[in-house]
Image 1 (cartoon, rainbow, N blue to C red):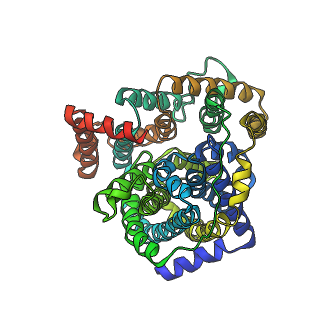
Image 2: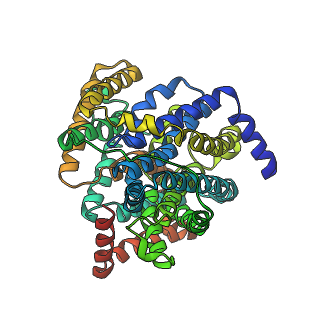
Image 3: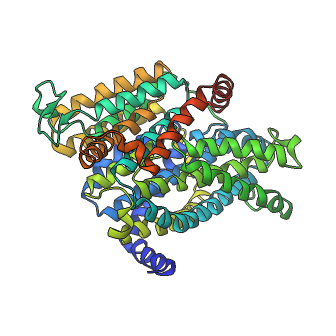
Amino acid sequence: MDLIGHIGLGLETALTLTNLLYCLAGVFVGTLIGVLPGLGPTATIAMLLPLTFGLPSASALIMLAGIYYGSQYGGSTTAILLNLPGEASSVVTVLDGYQMARAGKAGAALSAAAIASFVAGTLATILIALFAPPLAEVALRFGPAEYFSLMVFGLVAAIVLAQGSLLHAFGMVTIGLLLGLLGTDTNSGVARFTFDLPELADGISFVIVAMGIFGLGEILRNLENESGEDVTVSKVTSLLLTREEWKRIALPILRGTALGSVLGILPGSGSILGSFAAYSLEKKVSKNGSEFGKGAIEGVAAPEAANNAGAQTSFIPMLTLGIPSNPVMALMIGAMIMQGIQPGPAVITEQPALFWGLIASMWIGNLFLIILNLPLIGLWVRLLRVPYPILYPVILTFCAIGIFSLNGSTFDLFLMPLFALFGYILIKLGCEPAPLLLGYIIGPMMEEYLRRALLLARGDGSVFITRPLSACLLGLALLTLIFVLLPSIRRKRDEALQEEG
């Protein structure tokens, strides 16, 4: 089947009434959590995972994907109107978006952000459709050794690109890998690290880990930082852009899309890195560079294009290789496993309707978002007036119901607050928890491919360096680690991530 036929299959899947409703629900919830500070897509998807267990696989993934890229839209609204980024990737949008709002150009800033997001989302979806299938075909030739080496490279890249100390990131990945070892060994049937607790025989559900660390952990942090400040809302006038404004945002949107698309594929926070990189690039190449920080419309369009493109191209390694590029993609892989789908290149050939339906839904979701966001600005602003102490008990109740519905186990309910406390401690210690979740998801798969490769090689460990592709991937991982440990490179990395923070 050619590309046109695949797209037709995708549209046929995505345009069913059920999937359209789940797509709409996903982007609406995504926009909502993007608007509300403290509720990121990782925490929300972790909380909603139990609800997807009884859904059709396509509907579940379409909704979860909509939450992720929808949150990138919502974050820009409060960044522009209230000087308060709802999402980390919208931090840069504050610099010029809020200045435009103060100057009476809030409508133009919101329109530029929405248009940039839609164009970037559309182009990134096209890139996924064009490049994901060939990459999957290459990945189908991977053996167990190549997959193991690829996962090692992915974890090294996640350590290098994580915020904060390299040692902290390495520790987080290691803890994630160790947590993945809990439970019964599938080869020998021996219980590992269960402390003779039968409830741990199947390991700890990644939903509990994710919901505890990212969901409840974030609640504890936000309660501590609750300031109760009264925020003045800027008045929104005309949403129409002038011809001059259209000219000023056209090239920044394209450059931001290109930069964000590339960085989105890398392990780590691609959408965040993309927005900062796009802003820095535009400030250097723009003829209006002196206006940046004072209300330059390019300073809104470029980072918004980059973070939306990065959010969508991050699906490429997840769909084609089964490797998560960020915590949200790790949760998406978890959702696929819950649906009985093995992530990896075989998804395209064995589940074509699911794969192409998800891609088609991204374009439909972006269309929904541009229709939803601008007319509902008043609603989003009113929601921000709801005190957080009223919101968190609702979130806590929802988390508890979701966890209990998985296995009907009260033991799981006790585990969740333990991981919440652990997540809060990590935050206080300055340790980013995202690498932990990546290690936890990838760990069991790494172990499986390691054992399979050694079994096929009759215990000969040199198989990882004698197979050319595997050796190249391990070499890249080693070079990346050595490169970032060089004093000058490490200093620049720390400065860049500090500026991002």
